[in-house]
Amino acid sequence: MTQAPRHPAHPVDAQFTARWSPRAFADAPVTEAQMLTMLEAARWAPSSNNGQPWRFVWALRGEAAFDAIAAALVPFNRDWAPRAGALVVLASKATRIDSKGAEVPNGPHAFDSGAAWMSLALQAHLMGLVAHAMGGFDAEALAQAVALPAGHTIHATIAIGPQGDPATLPEALRARETPNGREPLNKVAHRGSFAE
Image (cartoon, rainbow, N blue to C red; front, side):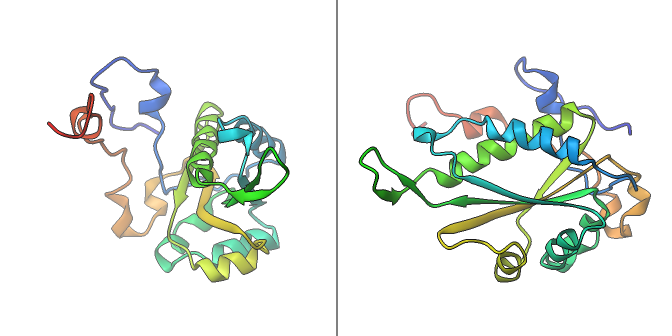
């Protein structure tokens, strides 16, 4: 698929500007081997105190677990995400074991899980796949669908697969099927303090 180029303001590797989150997926499978490679990349993400709080539940299209995850998405996401080859639920464990063996709150569990998501997304991109993370889901239904353990928080559901033709999307989404831009660097990064 051709896409509008993104132009960084400073030199970065092309993977950062070429990766984006399409909603159109090709009618093609994702294999178990591909999933394990993406999850392996996520496993090596940076982690505070090496707590590794991220937890993934994944299923391939055609599996009952895939259908259960898809059913817990909000209607907007159910319009396109079930065409993906795989669905992944990203959650994290909100506690960790400290150096004395006690279970204590793990403040950066969500931060670390975001790093794991980005590792997965970049690995998918390097493999010629696309990954689209969604926050639109029924948290209670999704927790039940994946048998979420106590003390865990769901952050996102991720659709993964080969990119497809935007014509397969509902008409209202077709015009949005293009990489978006980013805020200027000086709006999101401040040297020394937030005070200008």
